Length: 257
Image (cartoon, rainbow, N blue to C red; front, top):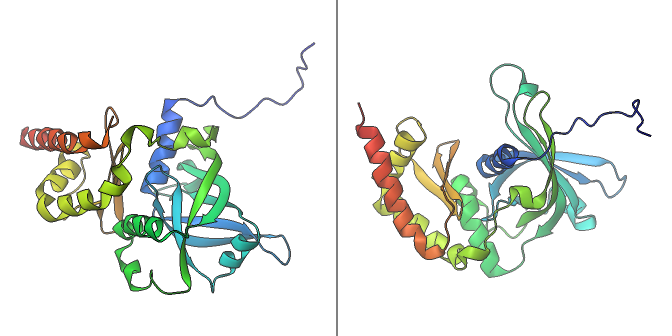
């Protein structure tokens, strides 16, 4: 017999709108609040960190061994990240998420070089200290996400709801740095057209910060704007033609009266 007095779940069913919101928050985040467990007491220890998404969307952060949370993560890898910036009005009315998982230090030199390039695409001033001996890049290996899209919009997402599958685009991670550099050096006009024509963003010297099978992340100062591919790339080789199609579409939009 059903218990009519049982508390009703406040969670909504996960749908494509929730998945897209979670992915956008992860992709556009430049900062977040990292929570780890203090070794001496087991108490939560929260600290603000700068972020960049890995190609699959998993958060990457750069921290020093001199920080308290570095030692905390070495002692216990469990961690969470609060992501989402307040805007005008009530801060609690704006979307945010808590990403929960295990923090892993990036040790491989090749992997470190790859994630460093993505990180500096959003935080270029970090080049001044990124290679100091006491700094290391970490990735949060996502296990689940608590998403709050605003009042009355709570969701519990699995990691796969917010991460981008890379299996269809083998070779894209290795090709990314060259593609990003090429676009920034030779096609700044196309990047500006993407921002203004397709995202309705303001004019400026927009740069390509990073790319992945599902879209592009454009940067201008402290701004990050996400341009989604529709549909996602089916192969790494399809990137060039997709960028050309988007450039044509963006310029056409700008030419409209």
